[in-house]
Length: 344
Image 1 (cartoon, helix red, strand yellow):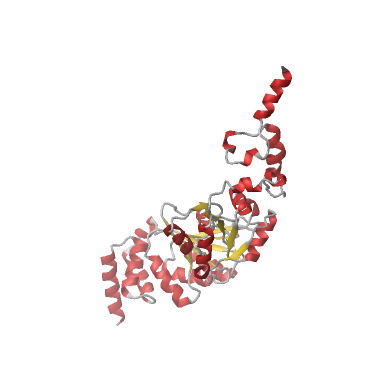
Image 2: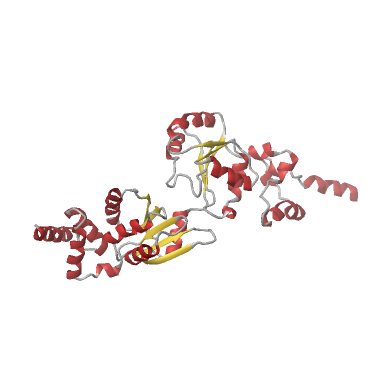
């Protein structure tokens, strides 16, 4: 009787291969299996997170669980351990990985012993390669899209491919993860109820100032990417438009020398003019017009408008002042016209 009962229990306990088949949701591994195959690998400081099925030649079983389509996979922005388990599953078992720079992505994959084929996919090749990628997807391929760091499509190529997939009814899904703009927003201590992401500003000063003039009129927190080398010049231009706004410069997010420097735009501009460009990747967060700006006196309003009129057209200066202080736009425009006539 005991032997019959033991045999019955053994049939209830699935083997490792069964756990990765399509009906795996009906089973749960026992405690010994968890300790031996999953927990040990997950908690190990340096060991890559491998699927246990790989050792038994059942990779195809896991692959069958991935629906054909395009997977937008987030990658770490500085700390390798920010990769998600789901991202590793897809990167290990997809048919193809699209990436900005194959050298950068290969380093990431090597850390986790992933050797799937890579295809470069960037601003200059997106239009050219969309057709062939769509063909692979129609044939049932599983394709992953990654950027060098962070979430794909955020200041990176890919939206055209997503739009083309959607137009053909092909499956597209996102695997969220590390994201520099949102991490910087969290660290800034600036209101997050409404925010706008502007990406990189133009490198040429005239074009950058023109872009900033438009963003200055937006009544929300602003998030910019900027190179460390151009940061002092960018903050100087910001300071001419919105010196009193709260701001933060966040750099090296998730890395050893992560730093968040907070202050007004004017204070940060002075700091980096004196200290020079910082090192590392930089995100600049600028707060919306605050209550203190809206209490600005009449003389201060005129003084600020005079500063704006040195570099901006009348209507643009009025829009910026209205955005900064809460002054009605018509009143700001009338003030700008009056002061502009005084200059003539």
